[in-house]
Image (cartoon, helix red, strand yellow):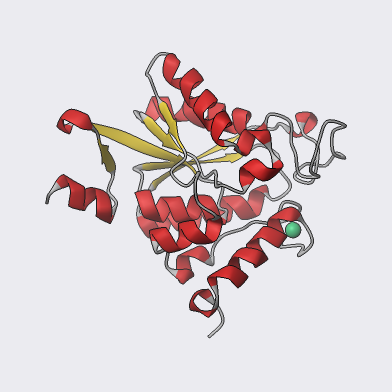
Length: 223
Ligand SMILES: [Zn+2]
């Protein structure tokens, strides 16, 4: 099969210049964005991190199910960062510097670093992250600038691992459509920041509901 076709279909590998292959991994939270990227890019590995966030159990379940359906090798890191968290995803009130209630200081930097530590041991050289356009509107660690800086810092170090956000220019609904994610797979996503059962009243739940509204009846999970 021609490599461009393999890329289009999604495959275990990314093809890079010169015909070489680079093993890809994905930081998979079990939310809509990272599930869509799992379907779109079909990385060989996915890494989920239980860092003590309130919705950890639901995120682990969603990520495990998606990896099982897509045949992706799944790795879960469990590390208790509760004492360092603040905001909706943690058990502490938002930090004084928080511009939105769900800001957890340096969260994406931490998650990318932890995932990279596991990924390099797995032979991964491209680590996908699920950042989408709207993330940058509420957190600096969701901006294009942040992704560029964290990629620069990670790839500067031994192993030269690249951090890539393939959906940085897309909204979540645009990503789902672009990747043609099956509704039944997307239905596994967990977006609530505050609980394992969606609370219906947090920034994660609001984004989830807005995205389903934008996607329309084609993505309805109700028969
Ligand atoms: Zn919620």
